[in-house]
Image (cartoon, rainbow, N blue to C red; front, side, top):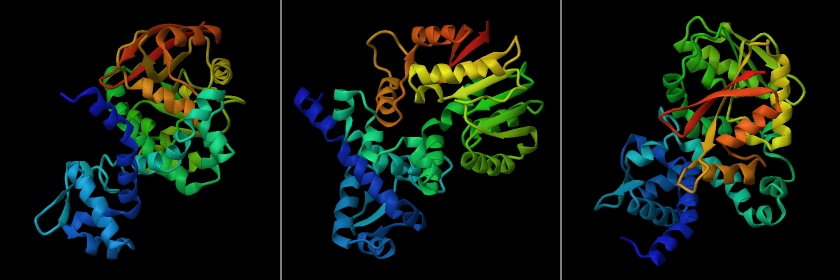
Amino acid sequence: MNSPRDEINHLISGFWKTQAIYVVVRLGIPDLLAAGPQTAEQLASESDSHPRSLYRLMRALASSGVFSEDSEHRFALTPLSECLRSDSADSMAALAWMRGDWQYRAWGNLLHNVQTGETAFDQVFGESLFEFLRRDPENAAIFDQGMVGVHGRETEAMVRSFDFSSIHVLADIGGGNGSVLAALLTHYPMLKAILLDRSDVIDRAKINLAHAGVAERVQFFVGDFFESVPAGADAYLLRHVIHDWNDKQSRTILRNCRDAMPNDGRLLLAEFVLPDGPEPFRGKWFDLAMMTVTGGQERTGSEYCTLLNDCGFTVQRVVPTATELSLIDALKN
């Protein structure tokens, strides 16, 4: 067992690996190694890098199992770096890019955030995350891919844990690139859907849903959930939406959903539900990410009940999944 000094040394050195992985992803090294082992000199030639510096980077990552290094100093992929290939089915490359780039810069301003309550990202970049993504198509695409990387496994777990068969039309509010709807519409062939998001996001969602063969069952709405939400659905799903916003902003979104619903409408919030106690839970770190990057927060079950009651909903149950995600099932009062 590590001593407390060793353990804290490991924790405070975490940014070393974050940045090292980010750099090899930016250089496309995992993709280059898909063809087979290569030396640092070969990789440097293909990635426009400094050979000796790249060798030192690859050697360090190999020592942590991200790559392997043989006796001739050739590097190869391992199961860890297979996940960093851009063409991997469960690629984490975009997430590594995102966390090593603009998220890293925002977290570097965590002290200011904690001292002032001002969102670190906004202070560093001079605009909110969503404004940043709206004007930067490259980072918006990386964000989409990164969200699939971090939350993609939750989709199957959600489908397995919650029965959507009684829902005729499901509205996915702030549905992003459509990955959740693609899975649900594939699993439930009679289900129809509404997708609301910004125009640039809707454009990407249309492509993804068409590729999944379900786009004809979706009505696409360009809009702002702070202004209004489309009517016509019997259930409204918001996955990892409310955690992006503070309580005042969240009430606006939730009340707009309530206004659009029929009297027997159902609200489904897919979120991390924090435990009330001190036990370890990964969502507590996501809560810091929300504070730092979006100004939002993760919430406990009691906090969600209070928030939803304030907005005219009654929580019926909280359905856990095989992941950290839970589905909060609420009815309109």
